[in-house]
Length: 285
Ligand code: PDD
Image (cartoon, rainbow, N blue to C red; front, side, top):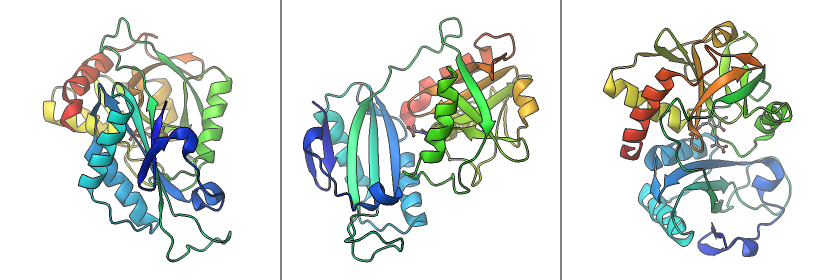
């Protein structure tokens, strides 16, 4: 049975009840995080929580809980759900008002909800056994505040579904200038001539923790060059390798984009080298 946390108490998921007047339900007025844990050990807990604090500040949700208090809650929910490979889902909504009215209400307590979701064990950093993802492409039709990890995910959900119904694992998104932004639930990378390239962070992109950990690992190691810069869709199709990153899929190699083969159609050697480094250092974050 799955044990969840709601507003101060742990309980079986069947007992967790939220009012329909909760602004998370009515407006998608909330912030969320997904933190991966392998064998009960988290990856990037502090940066994930910092991004959540930034998101709450951006939408003026005030909460006193410290990083140490969150750490304790996260450890408890991992233990109560038996450890192993879990995504820890944390959602903070603005709270429950007495009516449906757009303005931020005063004096409401934020609703805090946490649950765990099983995630796949980390894959081997081995190009000969790793599965290549196929991804679709579509114009990014989401809002202009993609740096905020809002629970209002309908734009992302519609895009993911567009890829999914064509049999894809993900879908890459490009802006009005035909430049890559990210994917519907991941950040995106290309590799050309041995250089790893990913779009610069701005309001069109979620500052992914996996992305940031990977870039930090590459920077510290120094053996694989990388650039943060604009990436055109022509560059995506002409790339030697394409990857997508997220907390639940780590670094996933992409071998097909919009039905077209990338590079030689096999999982790439730069992916293997970069993922080996990521795997060796991820628990340092
Ligand atoms: N998705 N971009 C978008 C739009 C995302 O939704 C995500 C994560 C990422 C990668 O961020 P991170 O590396 O911090 O997981 C990028 C999560 C996992 C989700 O919604 O389930």
